[in-house]
Amino acid sequence: MCLVVVAAPVGASARTCAVGGVCKVGDIGPGSGTVVYDAGEVQWWGRYLEALPLTQGRGLPWSVKTEESAYAGETILRQGIGWGRENTTAIVAQNGEGKYAAKFVDDFSANGKSDWFLPARDELDAVYNTSVIVGRPKVLPMPYWSSSENSAKYAWYQLFQDGTQFTDENKVGQSIGNKQLRKSQVHIGSSFPSLPFHLVAMRSFPVGTGVKPSASSVTMTGNSCTSIGPCVVGDVGPAGGIIFHDAGPRSVGDRYFEVGPVETEVAGIPWKPLSFNDVKTPLYIGTAKTSAKAQRVLAKAFGMGEANTSTIVQKYRGGNYPARYASRLVFGGFDDWYLPSKEELRLVYRTLGTTTPRLGSFGKSFYWSSSEYDLKNAWTVIFKDGQEFDREKWLVPNSATGMKAIRTRPIRSFG
Image (cartoon, rainbow, N blue to C red; front, side, top):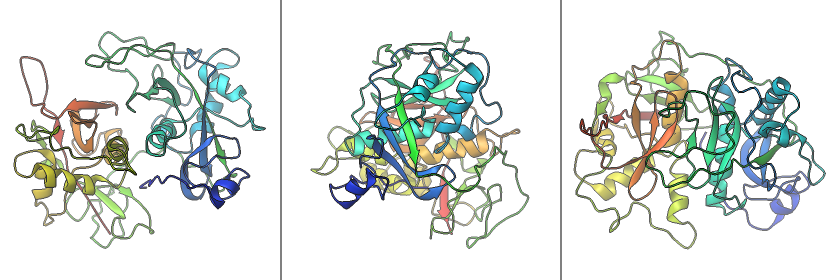
């Protein structure tokens, strides 16, 4: 799903949203929070998500039972949109009474609403994205807990200084987990200090319909599909890759998403031509309507990889770098490959990189996305555990510093 966030004008939707009617992202919802997500139609969990950053509950740990999973076997599923309420209920059922993040939000009541919950990882990211693009809700530049685990001892949190999401599961010297922490940890190369964890309360509306999905592991179907479909996740695509997403029948022209096989992968090329000056010629230039920072946030979204790749190649032109490599690739009889956006790349990891055995022959290393972090850095996803990090655009393997090759794997969409 490609989420397009548009600032809502003060008009009919803004007035009706507050009483449970039609909403736009940026409206004030029935609970006086800011609407940060619209699914387009009612899902099993509802349609809209509204968020209310809290001034209380700072410095709380994620849970009391810090070495047990609250929902074992569903950690990937429960990072997604719609799962915050289910996560919060499971965490409170496991931990009972006490002073911890999920319990604090579960007990929270405001504006006549008592059905608030701690947002899932993707729901929390929607809060960050909306705060940058629309300008609300007003969220402090602090670390915020999500309700999503990555494993029994580790939970996801997000830095609202820049939108990065972490678990610290592979942090050097960190082996006891992070659920007991009251402050974020300092990361090597980061200028962000250790700060108390903060909380966002979220609620969904209206009441959902349908059956919630269950955890499932993707397997190779053994089938091949054509450019006109139908395709299912796990099929071999028309170019010989793996189908990792079906956007549904409403997505004309970009319904199916195929990641290239290992033969399309390259490693060790920098994200940009080393001679290019991003300060003099930036990829994104702020306008009166949209800042460069907001454009970068939009460029993270699912469905933006092709446009990002075109933008990068038009600015950087010649050279050997991931976006140009993908755009010039001819493989399996197709030349419409591109470098995935951060969210597209993350979905590749979630769908194929978390299976047993792992599908797609991905290395447990960093992969470049087509989403720019800032003038000097671009977003990567590490296929060891799905964490996302900004990496300097000019990075190449370096035995002296221990820097390993960052990999590039293109994708294409069709149907």
